[in-house]
Image 1 (cartoon, rainbow, N blue to C red):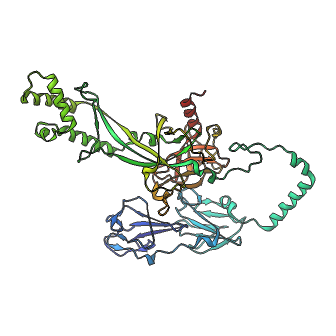
Image 2 (cartoon, rainbow, N blue to C red):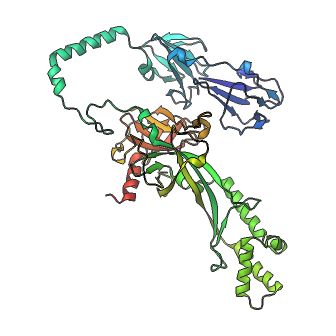
Length: 528
């Protein structure tokens, strides 16, 4: 993995000589699997892919050879390094604060992509500093950026000011003498107590119920985690409805073409029982309650424009609209000897009351659907529909329960995050290894461009500090689309539901503790 900074500054990896190019114009992330992620860093004159301007601070996937332009300068792909073939190595372990790293660290001194360790197929480990801001040290000696240094078990590795020695150990080869000693101990123990070992009773696995089960890798739970695609619209309800017998007092937000404004979004959910129930976030279930200040301004402006369209000057051109007809029907029924003058007086009073009326903003779901990992999809219309059955009511927990319309969890999903197995004890920071599965950045990352199949991302993490009443922080960034992802331990027990990220620049995510989802589930089903 490699970070490439692009801009007019001499400190960038690719320097572009143009007065229209910003000093730190854009960034590329070259992933070990060959993917290339491009992001415009809020440049003055924009970044273009195929002559289409990309949104600032939003990652897009590109391919080598694509036409890319930074302001007025075209990217020369010859200047972009080619990532070494990962197949040459037994493992490649990236270290840094960015969530894409295999080892995610936190602090003010480590860089986003700090260092890389490569394990060759003959078991040798080599560490390289990736040009980090505050350097990498092995046994107190600072590494020269870009230069490989062989490391072994027992070497102390510091990235910035963070000791990653223990985190590297699982990846480092075990020296032969240690194996030999261990083997001798095991043989001796077997010779002395073989009978006792045979007859020691084995506890059944809490996930599959089998005795002697060695646990379940995170990959086992991949089929239970689904991609969510949904769409909603805003509804404005006037508190002072002047004609309740003729109108419900509601206005659906529409655009200039008088079409309903439908807002699509994407997220993650996961199965928690065999009756088709899934867990996700509250902000996935009722997204309109998490509208921005900008949304508020757009809605307010739309309401004002809508009411203005029914003033005297504009009424005639709106005569075909349903609401205009409603006003006319009301006037016809309530105004004796209706004349044009009396009609306009009645209309004026109605519009005046609505202009003075307070109103509430809510929303309605147009649809909420799920797509299954590994499935072949040509369009999101092929996704299966579900509905919201319960949500936490407040955003301090930010959890919700969905249910498939057929009330059935697919038979091919062997392992799910069953409620009875939730981890409800107190989490200890920086202790147990945790995993999360989700769809960060939605179909941009998840959908295979050739097969059209969905593939969620599986990440390793851990609780980063003492949990609060409802939530806990975990290591790694949270990206839009990952909302509603399960966080679980090595036993396969659900620990929490991912729901958000910390302020910009802080590589911690936040999750609701699993015990509150269990409480909601039991309440929904009427369990004590």
